[in-house]
Amino acid sequence: MTTIVAPSHSFLATGKRDSDLFPAPSELTFSQAAEFLRMSERHLNDLLEVGRISFRWENDERMIHRDSLQEYEQWLEQRHVAADGLFRMFQEMGLSDDYND
Image 1: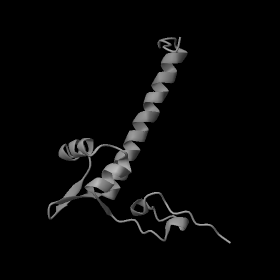
Image 2: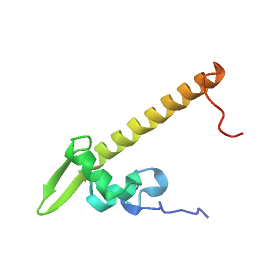
Image 3: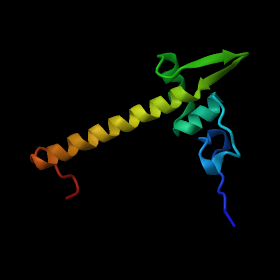
């Protein structure tokens, strides 16, 4: 017997084998997009206004392109990895203060 665990957000399923039951839409509502990125709607609004994440208007609702959300999420992850690398390098060179004392 196979146990299938549904993704935490059915609208975010990625099309992997276990999540084929929940097809992923190509667009999310504004609220869904904020939840997907785990950020406030205000911050998401700022990102939309500067063009960092693409969207379109449908009636009075902003529909956020799922691919754009994933690209932004990958960009954030790359920044975190780079920042962690710099921090480790500073530690190795003795240039960081240890605030845990």
